Length: 399
Ligand code: MN
Image (cartoon, rainbow, N blue to C red; front, side, top):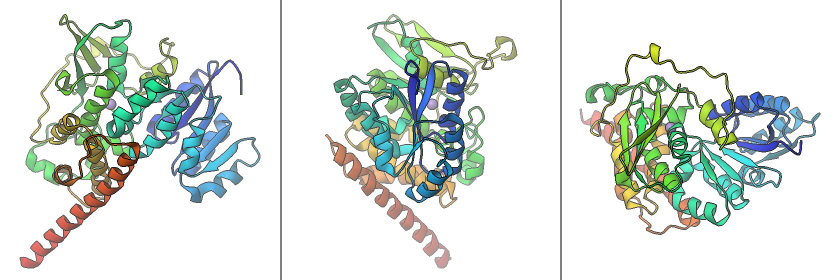
């Protein structure tokens, strides 16, 4: 460990954001050092990354991989841990300056809370953390003086637009959405799209979960909720506009009517690097956007009839309490089932709608309530899917 270099922990180092973050860090190795890496399941890549970046410690969530990880790194002075507890503990280690939270879904909540309690600067890529428990996270961050820098490209864009604005009031934030691979598909076509088609995102290269969320616009729904907590805006101050070129990453409109936008090529390395170097900017060799090669920017209103998830996200945001946590848990289950081609694309929204109506609402949830909500809603969602399958079967027998 080198004293004057910023010490970085990457939670979820083997995922799409994690691997790109490591590239960013190795481009700037005079300033940053990888202190800790964690992964959930991909032990082979974690071994490879550990040998290359030589962190002080590594942790793997799935304990069955412990022996393999331990013996593969036995010739190196790297501390090896396993289990979800160890990931939360790694996140609070004293020498760490910045924790990048890049794991998928609800699993990010607990380690993010430990990093915040330890007063770390958080480079937040795991948006579900703010979706599930935004109020709690913001309270804890304020209490522990932990700053949260967004890595999500839209929120990074807004964050960049706000730099230098002091306390100038925001009139609204405008989140741009690519519209995903199914933007132009009809309702009828959407009934038959497969997970393979959904995984082909036109502009962004991302992990499977966020790519499906992107196709269903749930990703944008989560980003609305994320924006509320990051920027203190209410739901009527958050607008979504479809911008298929994905060059404008998002905008802020101030009270005088002026709109600031942040533009660039769709490349997650830029927001990742900005989160590490903020408030400074470092030179990069990333491809530059060329106005001469892009003849037009277009904008559309999102279609809430074909993409109902956006509406459910606004509903959950307005309802507050544990409703966004209910939304997230239901979504994690339906996405997993859709990826296995067990349910259809439009069925995902049907089931989510059902779960939002049936889940137990808690207006002022504690951390324990969130944990309970998450596990209860997963069970409830699976039951609803099960019932839907039985009905289909019966229907077939009836025929
Ligand atoms: Mn995003």
